Length: 365
Ligand code: ADP
Image 1 (cartoon, rainbow, N blue to C red):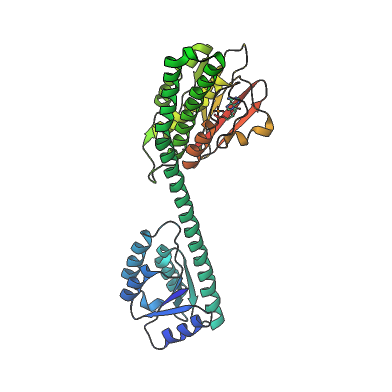
Image 2 (image 1 turned 180 degrees about the vertical axis):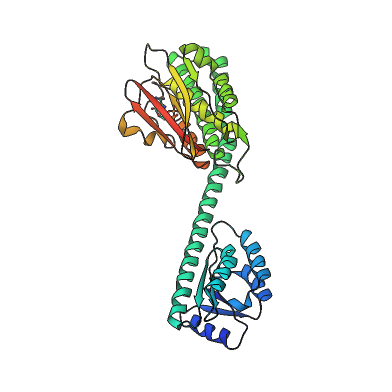
């Protein structure tokens, strides 16, 4: 609620301070432009300035300070212009102030109510900016917590889990002969459950890591390289299922190559996994430009997805099948969604149950 006032001539500053106090808000009078620039970084709800106190070099100083402000911040400036100026003068000053972004010109003499309403509106807008900042901070903290949690979960839990796996195998190997079939089955279940948990933890980590995207956009990558790497990792499933995979020319995109590879791997991997009985998978990848985006599509001839599940399959640990039917963690599509959204795109599915699915995602061009 602090309103900086720069109005060095006559009683201007004192009068403006009275108007601000009546709002109520907290006036802070500064004697000159240098002091004004020094006070700005300490936090300001709005600024009230008289035109004659601002020279072009002050505007440059302000503009350079503004350029270092975080994205949520857009401080408002209310500038009082002299009475009876020509249209050309107003036009020229307006042009000069334009680099300040959030500025309002009010010609003098202005009624106190006019000034008050302008300052009130500016403070309201600034409060909203502060709200955005605190919500953003809370989100960043929550995100960092989730990442930290996923890291500790996967690292700290992996060790005891490994022991469970190793020792259940050792018991089975060294003492298996003294167990009856039921006992041996129980022990095998311990081992396979530990393995499943290992996969869940690895996917949880991949999910957390999908959010670690730098502010700066990475260089463009050739999707063909990411696709080849993904298909290489899926080679045995491709061979076993006799899948036919065709990929049209794919455009270079600004993404981390490992993220694009993960998208292809999860989506093609699903297309292989959710195939129809007795029907070799046919998978086609394509892309097309729609407005400011590239739309990538991965189509299959598999079991398809019922309309009521087409949104919730992107949730964390969300699965439509038991592990006995199809193995999986329910994290693959959640990871894809997180990656795509972090680059400003979206992901969805179109499907005809019993005939196939087409997953589509967009990436800014
Ligand atoms: P997972 O495959 O480990 O279960 P995903 O997040 O990759 O996890 O997928 C979530 C669910 O979406 C799957 O359990 C499956 O029911 C459905 N699904 C994903 N891809 C396909 C597909 N290509 N065809 C049919 N169903 C699919």
